[in-house]
Length: 117
Ligand SMILES: [Zn+2]
Image (cartoon, rainbow, N blue to C red):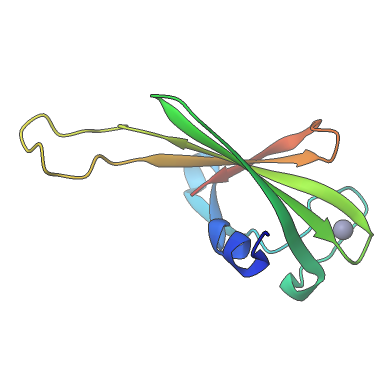
């Protein structure tokens, strides 16, 4: 059985978009990324499935989300790059990781790179 509340916790609340020289913009991931849908209500977004792949460089999580406003599904793809800046001096230190988030439609066609988390 899938616990839907746990799936919700897998999704970062925000992503950061780089705006060239104007710094970073913070955007909420509680929104539907499908075309022609303006749903930004997390109560109308229901994560229902997770796929995880891991290799030595990154962890890829795909969270499938149902939008109850447009009644379509989309996927948030979270790529967590490992060991971005691992310290060579202190072995006990947790390596820094970096995440990139993409939106996909339900057929896994890319809707674009959203940002970093
Ligand atoms: Zn929608």
